[in-house]
Image: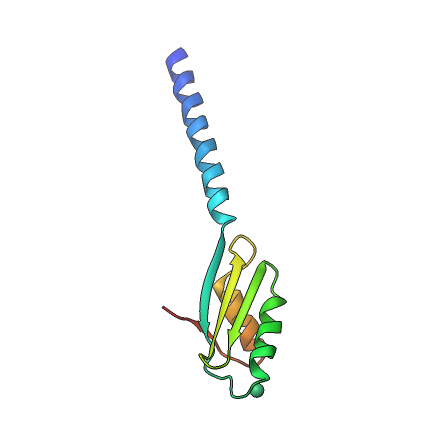
Length: 99
Ligand SMILES: [Cu+2]
């Protein structure tokens, strides 16, 4: 019984470490480059930028009209690439992550 107790304790310990590491990974800032092909004039990038900045968890947005892309830094514990795509779509611009 004593041995089993020890095993349970150590697995709890490992689980605790794994949980801490997972949480830290989830809190990491991610950067994604979204292709936004629908931008057709100098005002479009401003609209796209404002739409992305409204998303909770987004910390930085850089939109290039010339490259037709938006570089977004976000907390992936608070938002997702899908949510970013939805935000630009709602503003009238389709976007998808570039690779
Ligand atoms: Cu425009």
